[in-house]
Length: 171
Image (tube, rainbow, N blue to C red; front, side, top):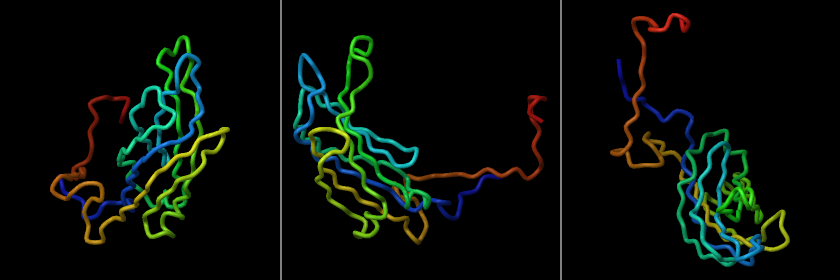
């Protein structure tokens, strides 16, 4: 009834990002400096760095395993959003955008799976972000790209004798 799948269906690989640093960030706070963090987006997947308190020039040096990349992501953008965290939401509102950086996935593929980007942020007056991005393709021999094969156990369940619901409305 239970079996391990032969292949990692639909997965092209893993996206790993090193958020190195940000420079010349805009100060979005009145009483102190911005409290920046970076969120990384690919499709519906997201990862974020911890917040760095009172710093407009943070050295982050944080490695993020962002996403399991499906073949549909290969035509998407990797989006880096820099935010100022607002701790007291009732008084300060939501987190403030400090800018963003875009990297088309095809650039990553074109440059051999690794890029080092140090670029001015978009949609802001000042700021720069330094990131290193690596795409690790799915191993052709099978297995799971984001972890070692010994750590990954995935099971599929198949119904061979029909299905009977315990809840009448579900039938």
